[in-house]
Length: 184
Length: 209
Picture (tube, each protein chain N blue to C red):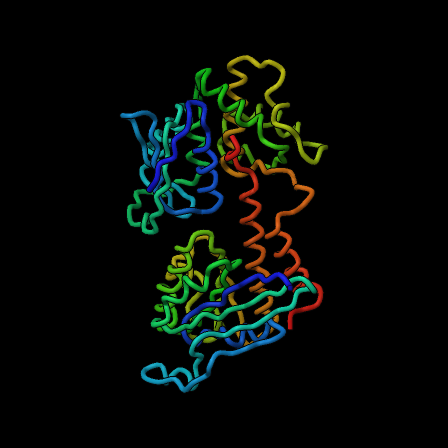
């Protein structure tokens, strides 16, 4: 049986998680798409309830499972559960949506507070005239040293770039851990 | 919050301090020197926060005295207490400046660092970091040249005087805590690194979907 690595894809409602997982995996199993209800219906006709899931076959002995966390705040209890054993999280946010950025503040903090969680942030819709600048977003989200990139959620190469950036973060973290005085 | 207790020559608190910087941790580092004296350093994402003089003083005490107990308190809102930001290299170079370590500390540090597995030294722009012991650093740098890894015992050999030993120990403390000393690559990479490297290769060579 192949070894399994796990990566999370998170972000507020409508941030492009489903598309992202479609681009970077070989097989995708989307959660149930249901018509959006209430206030959010004006932003998006259908939304994912539950979670997205995709598999990337790396080689004969290794698969990567990508889990898209539910974007709705009422599913926040699942974020921590799903993070268990994950290599890291790709966090997506719509940079032109005040609502999404406000939601992202709370969501991102939840991930930042998880011990040893590696994060990269992808900001979409930077080409729109009312989009906030990356600097403003970094400040608003209190990103500190978390890497952030402007991406086009419709571009497969951008999705792959974000995953690679996350993996580089994981490697950098491992390197930092390699010399301990713990044996004394 | 659970305190870790160590002996007179224990230096495990240094490993934790290094980890705080490199892992960009947020929280409070509690240190007990003995039953009466204690200190607390506050960090936000690996950077000290508070009054610079207080941070430097606390670090000097931590480096110059045996630490009996220490504990890490995870606090995510330490940013609220901001008095000022002090980068680790600023705080360390200031606290190591002219720091005279007694024989007990020198011996404990020398023993601890000499027991490390072979290390590599990353290039350090020492002149830009306001670090005082440039000569000792250059000697360390010289040792690292031309060989993939080296043993820190070499750095402490040659019976240097107490003053020289002081400079050598301060130098190793500086490069170790800031992460400029790394362990030499092992024959077998750790499992996580191997997994991540294979995934990266998959993306680099074939593309994903």
